[in-house]
Image (tube, rainbow, N blue to C red; front, top):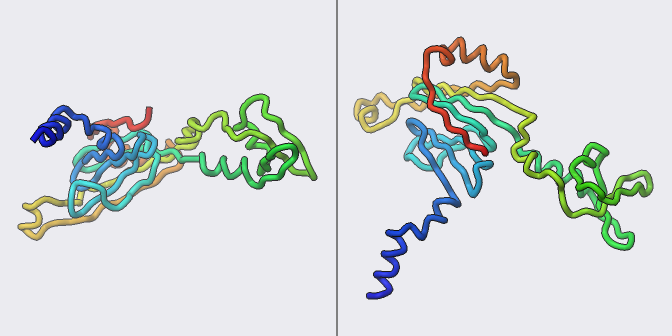
Length: 204
């Protein structure tokens, strides 16, 4: 009996909150969800035609900002360059009084801590550091930005639509590499001036 009371107290006082922190899902509109695992840097957009949780990925991590309403989802995206930089800093390993790690090219030197011992051996660059100096700036890497508009104005869900046999899973995705093209499309859709979008900032 004491064990049951103890478990109930844990649940009622929110002591299991860390479970929610590990995996977070927020429904934006219709069947479209924003998902995060462990950190806001993992934010991605999914659509689930059957329920309000999880679903098929529409835009991968990392989504940095989101605006949405009943017809559109507008978002900014930046890539995760951390895996690429790690591969570039640790191409191969040799041993000269300890391990030395081969660097892919000189551009990757910027991501090593100051004072790192860098050597040229047989025409190749090597270093002796197991650390990177700026991993957070690479995930997401905000110097690269892409823009998305998801037009879900024709997407219809809910039990009334199913009852009337008028459900529709139609939506269009527009991708843009330049901010100018992105804003031009927003103007054409009437989003900038006519449609008020709720904003969510996903990354700190």
